[in-house]
Image 1 (tube, rainbow, N blue to C red):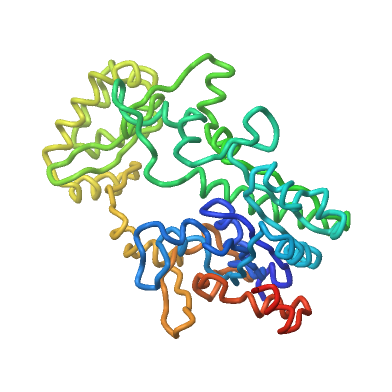
Image 2 (cartoon, rainbow, N blue to C red; image 1 turned 30 degrees about the vertical axis):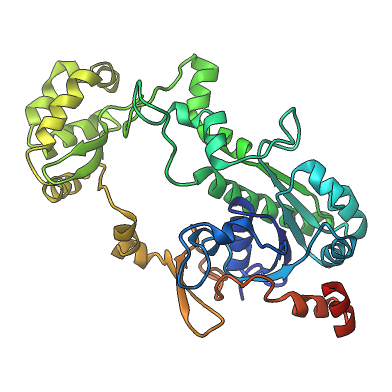
Length: 389
């Protein structure tokens, strides 16, 4: 038995953050009903379109769900959504506050019909403040929250992180908030409002960068693949490609130099401490780059790993998804599609010894379960046909 079996979730969110949260709930056993507009979630049509007919974006965050189409501009559809919420454990949406209020799916309205409901809203910039009604996008929040001030190279153009990490991390944060609220409900008998946003996630992820500024007045600067407070700790170009290597402390620095077949460098007074290596970055890094360039990646990786020095080859996505370490930890999941085939998807970022795993079914076709879900609400075929009209 999966740990969230018996939990019923209504997912009215769109694109990445909310759907990823709801997919995680499905992975651990919850019944998730995805509510979509007649045109479907906008990311259904984003490139690339896969052989399954889904976009890669949509397929990555919607396995294990049922799909129902409701045109929430219609009062009859809003009434159906309230009926779904009345028997649900969780309702998740990503509407702007004013839109949610206009559709009648605010926290206060739904709490009246279901006091045990855990209500989760995900916004761009938070539920309060002057930007509460501003739409949020991963790229824009990377800029707004200061993330892009730390990426790229000094004097270069702003650089976006290639992975939509704020969207996905917001989904993980919302998952944690919902499960926390469900645990609290076991004690209080009541649901609550879980509020998350891309902005709050991004600022939280600033972590030590923000603390260094608030308490020390230190602002990070772009360092390419490196780090403003550690040297060496970056990508190095070898004879046939790149590898990443780092020495976060003095003991690691000595092993780093030994791995480079350059033990005397560890005795150089200019680089004797972490602080001095940071100060001498412009001297030290070119010296290291010349050394790495003498040999291929595999040669250096073998030497660095043999000496327990932090390192990694620079993999492409195809290499990652075929790597034995990735496969051994079940990060390639297989889901069944309605036509008897299978789809490869990405596994969950954590596992439970029992009750974990991933949802077994592939992402749903638009509206595939509308009639079945409405029938489960007690609607007759005649009533369903009337709603369709």
